Image (spheres, rainbow, N blue to C red):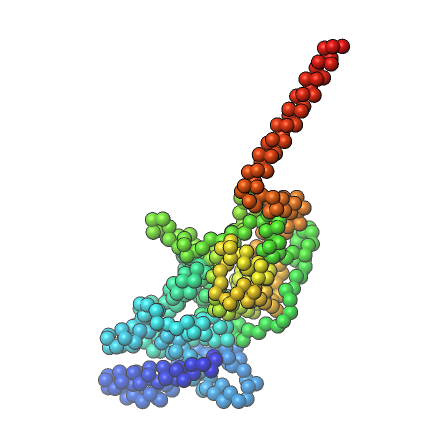
Length: 446
């Protein structure tokens, strides 16, 4: 983990050890020294560390000056400190535990959880502790008999309520079973994309550090089957929001916070920011976006979710939905003009300094990402991208959009134009009847 908060983590573990020592003394047990208890817990934890230390987060054997990380003893101590700190911040309510005379009271509210703690523990890939280890530490601290509910359910409630629903990233029931995450960032990914069927992850997600280089999006055209061979090869890409507007593509947003409950208070339909819908209005094609509310935390959350998918892009059970969505947004809102337009359409809203700063963050969101945009398996928005690209390349659509934008933007001008067309039509009709009438008289005179 980062160096920030290391002192607080050690103090948290010391408090837990002293509290456990007091409880053992009251029960008359022999091993009551905090150091002995800590050694006992690390021995228990070592039985479940079945992978090399290099596969866990924040451990690099090449760092010679990291003395605590050189030995298994230091590594177990790091796991124990981090696990106790996470459980202390998110799970246990010390006030309720003191009132009950124990140490296993589960929180009923997360109002006092700091934003920085949530950011560091859930969003950052480098800080993830294996969930199996976290569950084992929880069992060591309170025992399996005192566990009120599974640990994954408690963290799922927190992420749903205080992350996804609070910021409008996702609403409604996202998963109909118990998730089986590898770590907290993976749990956030599961709850964001949704899971209709509970299934264990057959391939463990790598828990190492995530690094992105500065290359561009790779648009590879790999033919994998016969159906792909028949498909004409094309260079697919998303366009800027302003370019779509010039081609009569309607971009609209719907605020998930405003529809989180039905008219009668019933549960709403499950939907997240990833659920971009294709719509048609008045003969125009368009996209309906759940509004993306952007602040400084959003970039870290999306960036680390992209990195998590990049590490697992060969795993069939790990969909690339966040990457596909972020690629759309990074190309759609890459200039200040686009961000301003999308804000007017409620597609996105931000708390950045200005539209330019927000556009720069959107444009750099997918730096270093390798993604096959023309693959139905990885890009769930491919068909939408193809249809919008055809609309963008259509000359009649651009000409019609230009006419509407230049001559029919003002309602008064629109009404006047319609009246002028009607007047011209009646004038032409009158001229035709006059010609026919004259022609009839000439024939009668002959």
